[in-house]
Length: 248
Picture: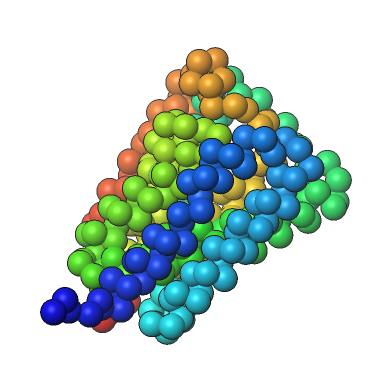
């Protein structure tokens, strides 16, 4: 007889089934609706789908605290996130990408803040550093949780951006996973994630990945060096920093 699935294994199966509609969606849905009136409603629907689904999968097996919705390491996450945002701004400032304030109307400003805090930040952290992290950590180990959630976060960003999107997602996924590991919760990460995305949308034009790969170049080497030092310093610190809570 086959042994029954553990709660972490059954959660991983359900998460996998939940992501299956994303394959035909990437092929048949996203390309036709990009830059149309349907893009925002579709994005909202996707995030609501994943938030509700992840809460359903996670809270049937674990508590809010166990999936990362707790007060552990909020200040630590925010401090590390501020450094990460600063490093990203240094990187952007080192290139020929122009900074232009784009949220010119109050309704657009409020809409972007709500979208990135209530949907993107909450949704992506709940998926990758929340329920999926908990399932992988319980199924195998923290190391598996770090690397597989990082890989998954990279793949999540393939839509419309290809391999470049995966690479960027993996880079930031490593930092988010390291912060999650050290902090012990995701509330601070939700705020950091939302601030990173909303601030980029506010000041950086919507540039296609092909343009980023072929036309963007470094024009200020000092900012580039500052960015590299900040990124590397934060990564080393996260690797060596103590846990913010006792291991359980």
